[in-house]
Length: 128
Image 1 (cartoon, helix red, strand yellow):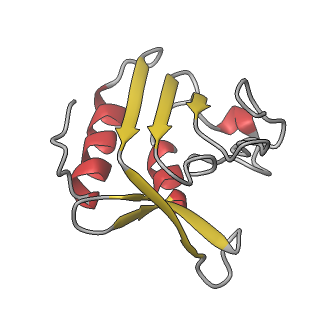
Image 2: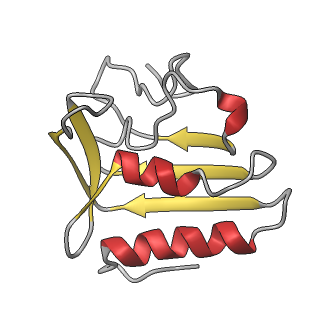
């Protein structure tokens, strides 16, 4: 389900929800975002001091909201996420979580030179 380059936060969430509801139990989904990203002050009591966000045409989409939406997928489904934006290294995150509870996600993201893309505590193919 392709969205326009000017997709709003709600359009992105709605499209992910729609795919999660329609995908076969053993299906595959590609989530690709190319645009602006940023880090903002995290919510009080949240899991981190800063939240990574995707910048949508109307507002931001926080990493915690993306994680909640991706939880709609079944753990038998496979998802490839490619985020080409600043601060994308942990915009898809599962740290400290039981990974078998989540869909099979491979996340490709950027990181600063010499840093790790820390979406998973054990790192990934492009961690260094």
